Image 1 (cartoon, helix red, strand yellow):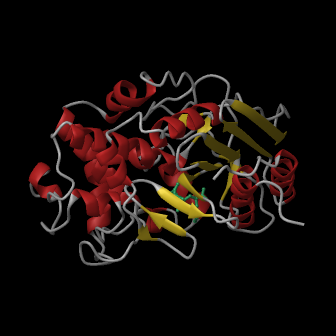
Image 2 (tube, helix red, strand yellow):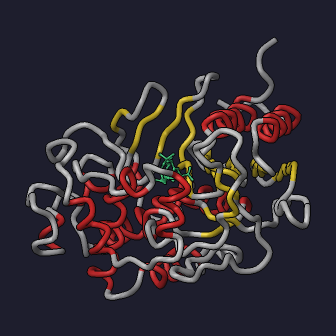
Length: 349
Ligand SMILES: CC1(C)S[C@@H]2[C@H](NC(=O)CCCC[C@H](NC(=O)C[NH3+])C(=O)[O-])C(=O)N2[C@H]1C(=O)[O-]
């Protein structure tokens, strides 16, 4: 069943609402069976007032989790990894519970506590305390292990960045390479993602980019320029930099079956409930939209940037949307409307 045509005026309206709610800028790109629609409002830089553009690079936050999941599923195709094997088989002694499997980790059912809950309990002080820090994967996992598990292994979905730090450790151990090398070799180069980078722990976003502005917890307080950070608190859970075009190329390739076997793509889409209109697979979210269409991708929230990156089941239509603010629930919720405009078209009269 063909999707309704994308509603570009509606999409533009969503972005203008995000501006009214405090985002300096917002943009979106829809790629639909070879046709591209773009829209951008507001500014990339609050000092120079340069307008935001879809050519601007930005931090994609947890959309990074799809990159990590793709690498591990390719390793499963190469028989270097079994999804239902315990993590401790590959990383002896890492986790205190030998029952936690790779699948549990990639579907947020490991029960591993999310260390960012404490790290960012106070938004700006938490960010300032880590923005220049470089962490090892082990240090991040150790922070998590100081707290009790949130569920038994294979229990209910409970989102945790710790899971995708463990995913990064698995990538390093199973390939002998850095996460950066594996992203480059398996995703960025094959798909020619010219504006996609993993530069951790360098703090600069390479080339032309949007500046990102963190909204403080105190209402009315000035936005904090969060553009420069190591993103070392996130790494394989959230440190990739990209653009709307590259994210659409990536998601179209993924859902079009060009990044792994059909068997592994099916594994990636074994869903567990994750809220009333959401489900989670392996590093992949499914969102059910008001028009009955389901879309597949991930959201990202990293200091200064909110990202939505989703595609249709066959990958032939994709949307990437960005606002250069974060810690602003109204904006995050408003931007959900970009999915409706892109995949459900004009609302019924
Ligand atoms: C579930 C999410 C939305 S949050 C999760 C991950 N981002 C983080 O865990 C960072 C949270 C702190 C970011 C910060 N917020 C605070 O400090 C609040 N005190 C801000 O808004 O800039 C990501 O990205 N994921 C999104 C996802 O996966 O969809």
